[in-house]
Length: 362
Image (tube, rainbow, N blue to C red; front, side, top):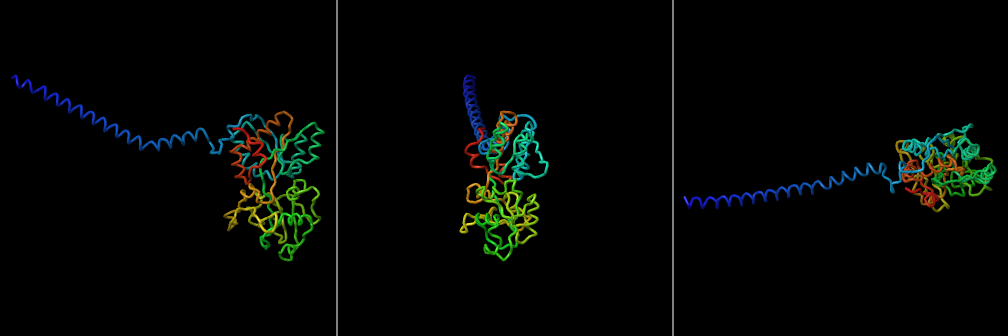
């Protein structure tokens, strides 16, 4: 009896030790399994969390996070604007995005009474009180500044985008390119036949928009340079492109965004001299058209290697009222990171002056 009662506690102690060891080993194994599972899931969980944060905090991926919905100081109300035909792609692409993101800023485009979309008409409508701000494809003239001053107004021209100017000809014309000086001389009436430029014996038929829309300023460097008597005016780029397609010797110039993607005409490379021509389109020239449209050479417009560009301006009255607030807010939206991405989608690049002076704070 004595010996039996002595052995039982020893056996129970061994069982307890084994049980404790088993529990410890089990817990260690459980921790190892859980740790391994967490290690395996960590990249996926991190990726998911990052994606969620990006979606909620940055609705459009922009370099500095400057998006339409983050801009402050946007006035509420309906504001009239209009002007240069060169701004049509911006109105269609960028302004549509702005309206969706900032519905409190109602932008109403006003068609001019004569139907002529031009910088001059838009600026005059601004001075007449018919617009709150205007679109222009050229700087303000001395006469426009003087007229504003007579009315007790100051007009500010805010550079927004760079627009490449492209010259287009009939698709059958065999010529490798033009210098800017040669293009100017064509429109001054000094060069009248393509044979003078190494082409075939064919009279040159130059077309342009009405001088009021800023067409001379697009290719001429001084106000003393004027169109020759042989230059024919057309009401719209659409009409001009149709005429160029139908006339073997014709030439026309306009915003690269408006003409380089057209299949019925051929855009010409331009150069400061004949040693190097730079195309207004991205090479190689897309074929076949219209399945693959030509695209503007935005890189060359931005770095200055393309020799013929112009700034597009927002013209804003400095009167301290809601019209000024709206014009300046519109400018800030265009110059935001999201606005600049949209401008590139529309076929333009940001003006250097806008980059240096008018870049809005986030």
